[in-house]
Each structure stands twice: as structure tokens, then as C-alpha cells.
Length: 169
Image 1 (tube, rainbow, N blue to C red):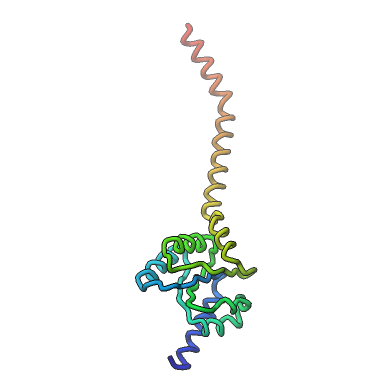
Image 2: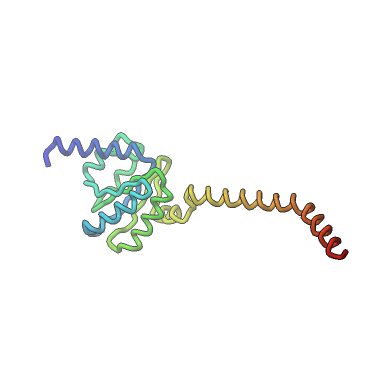
């Protein structure tokens, strides 16, 4: 690999580091090409990227990014997950690490903080934005339905009373 191609790779890594709000590091313990292809398609479904990186080039790319303090974690075979939705990405990441014994969660980083392995696992157990929205909508519609029934109940009682009088006569 010549210097020009390395510089291009560093630029691409820098763009990725600056474009996403969170990254997760995964220790690649020998994933096959088919495994990586399958993993990439799973992350693509939540607008995230899975990429095997060259550590030395990634460390150079990290220098002028929001994740510059994390260079120490780039040792050994590493893969990165880039995401703007850390909860969805962490859910898929934990599922993948459970499915593939050759992938292991190392840690994660958001624009605000560095996450340990345990914090990434805890993050994966949180509700996603879509799940929260669905719960809120369910609560709102349930309350609205109950309110409509309460408002209509006096009228319904009156109709039932009148029907019972009509049946009696």
C-alpha cells in the first residue's frame, strides 16, 4: 500500500469519525468474509456501518475528531461500528456478539463519553426512539379512548334506561 492510498484511507476514516455520533469497537477474532457481509447488512438496516479498520491509520484519523482520546483502544484486530443511533446499533452489536463467537464487544464512544463493555450492554437494553414513540402513542390513544368512553357513558346509561322502559311496556 503506497502513501497516497494510505492518505486517502485516513481521510475516509476522518470523515466517518466526524460524521457519526457514536462508534463501537469490536474485537475481530477471525470473522469470515461471509460473516462480515452478513453483519454489515444487519447494521445497514439501522443506518449504521460496520468496518474492519487498520489500527495505525485509524489512530492517525482520530487525531482531529471528537473521539481523539480513544486511540489507546486500537490494538489487535478491530472492527468499528459507526452510528447516529447508538441504542439500535448496540442492540444489533450485542446480538451479533452472541451469535458469532469470533466477535467480542470491546467498548463504545459517543460524542460525550467513552463507554465500557458493560455500559454498551446496558445501552443495548434501553428502548429505541421508535419503541418510546410507540409506547407514548399507545398511552395517548388509550387515555383518549377511556376519556371518550367516560364522556359517552351518561348518554349510554340514559339510552339503556329508556330501552328498559320501552321493553316493560
